[in-house]
Length: 281
Image 1 (cartoon, one colour):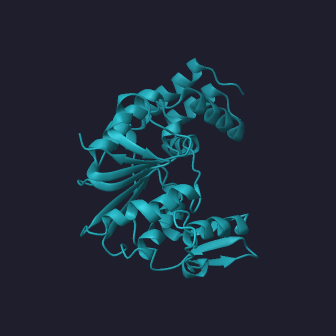
Image 2 (cartoon, helix red, strand yellow):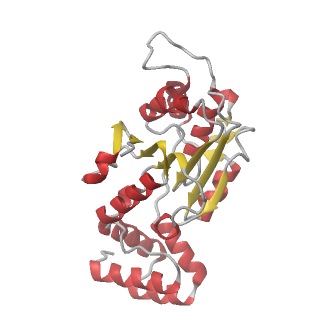
Image 3 (cartoon, one colour):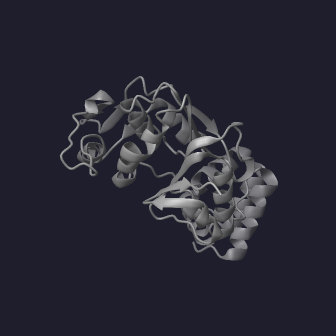
């Protein structure tokens, strides 16, 4: 069922009237695509969907979870993780505490990717990791650290690119096999995170659009990967300013490969791949 702008606007208003969620600055096309899928999945018309939202707060939460997209992988976009490992994290060696925030963390696979790098660089114990998402279902999965993988070999390939090779020093090879951090069950296509990576991260339900920084600190690294792409340009720029203000002077912002900055805000960061280092002005 095709959803037009007036229908999408009515739905956004209904969600706002019955909750604290605000989708007014969500990308129009992305929002409409998600709503069309919801209508198809629930076999409802737009007016019936809106009526049910008014009557059923549990259903409203389900709809919000379906609107927000949850896509993540361990060491997704390997070049970004190679730069993070061999260039970025090493500049925090001197610090007594490292604060990291994963925004829109989904099921937490990139959170565990970060923890692996921190552990290998002896930064694990002095790091504080926070991970937030709107969706409590994905946060529950993240806390358990058990993942269904269809392509185990692709996962191992990505892991080896980051953990066993150094593209910046071609003769370097590190023997950090995946068994150190994961239990793989090929029969069930399951990957389980091993301790001590579990229980390190503080996972919190949080709306970055409405709540801002709830942690009362600035951060060395903020991850917000493949979240901004679903927002309009006005909200993207507002959040880029927010990230700048909430990063330490030597902090970095890491966003998705298909996301980027435009305009004046871009002058406040130095870019390498998907990693934006804060410039002090």
